[in-house]
Amino acid sequence: MLNNKEFDLWAESYDQSVDLSNENEKYPFAGYGKVLDKIYIDISYACYNTVLDIGFGTGRLAWRLYEKGCRIFGQDFSDKMIEISQRKMPCANLYRGDFTQGLVEDLKQYKYDAIIATYSLHHLKDENKVDFIKSLFPLLKDDGCIYIGDVAFDTREELEKCREKAGAEWADDEFYFVFEEMKKSFPKMKFEKMSFCGGILLLSKI
Ligand SMILES: C[S@@+](CC[C@H](N)C(=O)[O-])C[C@H]1O[C@@H](n2cnc3c(N)ncnc32)[C@H](O)[C@@H]1O
Image (cartoon, rainbow, N blue to C red):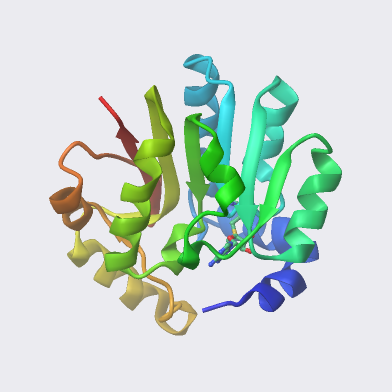
């Protein structure tokens, strides 16, 4: 699993490498563009204003929402990612913190229309994902929504097929979402598949 220093080193070339994998429809970022576009459209359509981005990276999605006028809050543990994002979004409220330890206290003082996490929560083990996602619900406004865009599969069988195809490229230390398994903890969860290895998991309070 990449630590914060390794993300620091990746930060400058992050956008380029992700775009390449997305354009070539290769694991792990096949569907990345569609995932971000769809979340952006849904948040815009819902007229959501206050957005929390967990693991915002270079701010690819948060920046678009910021430009649209959303109030952006975020947490990431890479100083370099924070520096890049803060430069793009000078008025965003960006905090440094490791989400395996939960959210920083300051971010728990607000309620959000939308909580987004794109390609970040696969760093949590499945059992920790469930607890972490549950801890987000009290921070969501009543008509708010949680959008998790990530490497994700309908079934464990699909994940295994992807692992086989990816061969040596497969990241053994990442824990990808399997919708049918997540649904056991979140019966109201929805899944929108965007590519053979990516999609959006949606959760709302109501
Ligand atoms: C693959 S990037 C995704 C960035 C962005 N959300 C996107 O969609 O392009 C993962 C991001 O999550 C952050 N991250 C990974 N593990 C983390 C952790 N335990 N706590 C906080 N941030 C973490 C990394 O620093 C990085 O910025």
